[in-house]
Image (cartoon, rainbow, N blue to C red; front, side, top):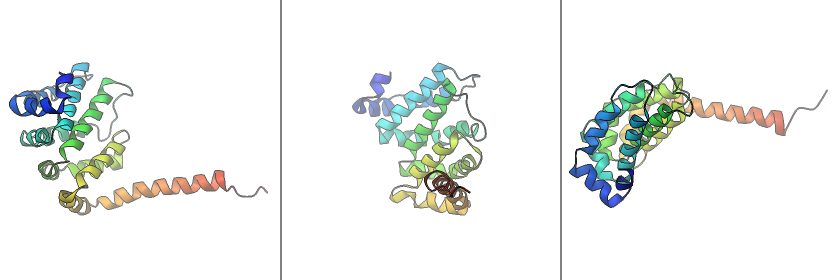
Length: 188
């Protein structure tokens, strides 16, 4: 299946002409503890289908895929999956799916309606593993000519404080590193 969906010419036909996208969405919602290899692989195939075709990105938005994916990701706003586990790769594939979907205007609109901006801000404040992925998702959602509404939503949700605070922590760390290592104070 992965070989078939990896071909752009076939990917769109598979996504549009079959019920595979709906089945994949249903499959990734099945409760499993721990996340199985099958569930992880389902998310990976879905990500490949979405990366290969803008039409698939629009179709998944129409199937309420944005809401489903954000609900699945919300479980990781405060907790991290086990390192090097199937669950960790599953979460990365879910973020990859969302990044593809918000590339289209329909996906951006659904992202706003499903409170994706707010979820990403929570992840930026409280998450560990999800923090850089949430920032990347926001970056893609705000990009392009259709990203204006997502930017406005970020400002309305008081997200600038969170985002700039994150970047300032990096600057302070680099300044302290420079002062401590590169330009140390004279010895007494």
